[in-house]
Length: 139
Image 1 (cartoon, one colour):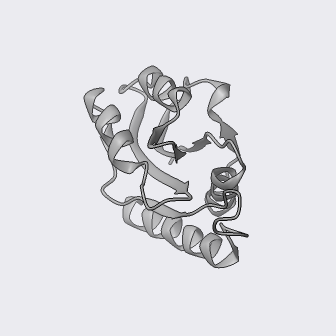
Image 2 (cartoon, rainbow, N blue to C red; image 1 turned 90 degrees about the horizontal axis):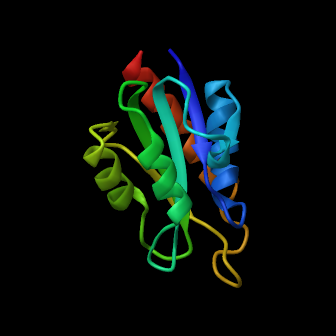
């Protein structure tokens, strides 16, 4: 099974999750700036909510994805507020006819004085458990 982990992270919170998911899947996490050309049975794609929406670079990356090369996207995200990136990302990906897993992973991320230390070790353990669950159901 070909697994890819891609993410966009301004403050490092989503990168922490991406690195954890990559360790769990035994692949390397890469920032979305590295392009969207590889084939993937599962693409773990991470982003965050910034000022009420996902960053334009994430939208651009998703628009570049080839539905013939990406079988399924699993979304993971962080934010300082309760919003999750999943609905906006799901809408964009489904518009391109790319299958989006019904399961997604979300945790709080540190921002200024909010949620100090997040994602923390407990969050990372939850992300690893989520990832193992995805892999179990896809093999």
